[in-house]
Length: 453
Image (cartoon, rainbow, N blue to C red):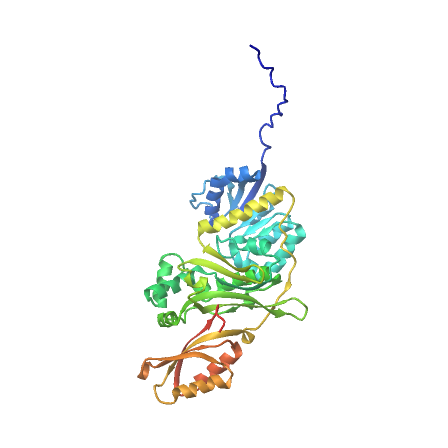
């Protein structure tokens, strides 16, 4: 019996343990609902992030208003301070996460971090909608990241696809439900027949609406988000005060019922679209937030409760929709963490996700925009009323697509849906109708979108 000689093939050297992870320390400004959720999520996912990226991310310091407040975030008391700027300027802090909200002092804190060459993650839509241009330029000048996935649509991945995957896409229009509070209110009015006041009170009880709901129901929150979307999609700065804004307080359960019977849902939406080329060659855009009749066949019509959805129309890609939780501590923290991982990896590799330099957009006045409209008029119930009303539409070139009468006597109402018309012509028509002795009230004026009529 012979014994085989040992295999003489060289055995590869033992690669040994993986290279030690690069360490990145973050300074957290704010540790409320989102900041606390971020701290917990980061601890839970720390080993997975390190295994996948080779980067160990830890919280180095935390700035809060009240150090004595109890927080279940698993962080030592020694990490907390009330001095926000000291966190930004701490040489041991590599990345700043700004979650305090508002414009001041957030603007100075973010600007200082960028000046020091530190990447910044923020979910602050108000800050970016007002001062985005200067902060984007500062980030580019410093060669560091300024990431803000959580500023629009909470946990829905939207900013990264718009900034990266779709940067070369000729986007024609973006329509979105980007405020969960108003969508919740309109859902309850639609599904339960609740009044606006009843639905708002329920939203406040559940924590979807603030005690002062103005920012949500009057469209300020959505306008800030729409400005950010428009800036990123079209590569030109749009500020929140340039966004045409209308609230939902005038919408009634009866309007919603009539719309449903006609094949529409009423939603509070943002519309961002390219309207032409400006005199300097830059884009001319139309940006507005308002209630709208959306065809029941359109994907946005089925978005319920506090969910958000953004529907994008592109020449090359066709139609895309992003859908999910638009707010809440954990979804928003998830978006912050995604940005944080990107920024940490870029920091270690001495790179950044460049935003680009933006000129100011030319924002087309709402009076020049085209849309179809739903109009509800309270009228005197007598012969000849319809003819006199229709005459005013004809005077200003507003074409009527459909008309019906509801009720009799003192409850008589005429309901119109127009063909696509210019806003200024519709407003002139409404002014003329209000002068008629046979029109006692203009109940509702709501745009119709998502349908070529």
